[in-house]
Length: 515
Image (cartoon, rainbow, N blue to C red; front, side, top):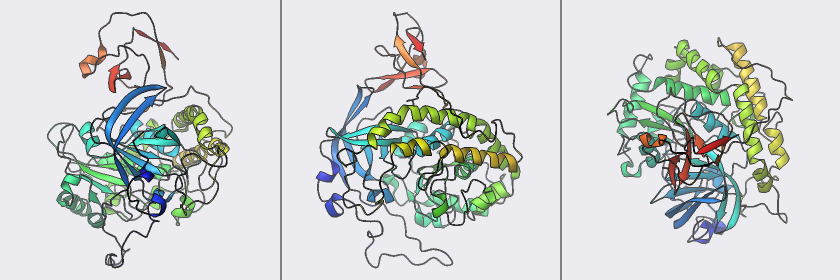
């Protein structure tokens, strides 16, 4: 992938081509004034990233080259992770795209022994029908050199908005809040940025949002202004998964977006998009959210969040809204009987790739190019850590994922007036074997009430003799596949494959299912 490796091109931003250690970027005198009665807030800024332009990107699936994109920019990605031994990367397709997406993030997620937290978080949000990025896995190569296994995600960028909200051509009201203390107050006007460089510095819409949500006293005042249930569901998701590095606790890692409001779907209301899910399912909860004790799964919603006026209005003062949305999430996604088989399926699929990634060759781990990294001098997680932490065993700062889910579910069922469709107190020795899944959702609906993803095993399709039939996908604007029966994803319309980098519908009669 690419014509040159990033660390080989141009003037690097730090020693040996690596970014400077966190905290060394500001120059003397650049610190902002201290905010009255609160923390020192450093105004958000868009930093120049170390990057390589005019690269070539090849996407290969199951040994078959699906697409080649020219004129690609590859940059070192992440915030604190820029100081890791194994770097993360951002990919931007300046021309062309991959399945309608133009920007991607590749992250090693070195701190997650299970390597499942980001994937599970995205899958839960997508299953709930909420606007979310999608996540999968990829083996990354630079110029033929294997860099290891990465978590692959798309990104909330201008191209994503245009793909999902087709009526928004300008994308002038998408704001990224990636710095701490963006607590839905006037802090956001300092800490958040307009995510569209063409509208850099335009903050009037965000100022209106902050003023409106902080003067409102009831849900009724906000129903025509914001997607109330979508906000509440996002907050409940953060609480259920123990996602402390997010809007309710640290006040970061989310977007605010105002729809254009010119049709029934894009109704002009504000929405919230969460991202950065490596600190979920109780990961690092004990040592980063200092006011929490124990494993944290027995913390109530009221105890969980930092003061937020809008949360008080929509949750504390409106128990009906909270319980209704909590019940919806428990019914639809956050249930052991749904998540545990999905975890087993993912584990079965990625296990050989995790073993390859975490097995050193001559004492060296693949992709560990940052020789000057001062972070994480401890030994990398092992394959055995992956096996254990994805079940019930705590590894490092990561609570066992199934342990977290079961304990969290049991606590909620015992302390809130909800019906629990999944059995509680599942045996820790329970194991479900399910065929591996390699599909990921790339079709995201702006409706929060529509299910767009299901936790089902992959269906392998094998070709049979040709049968004449009507092409079902043509009515959706896509041709039927002519030379493949390989399923990449399945939704309510049918099974989808790809030819020449474009989606195509799998003909149901021509291709025979083999599960």
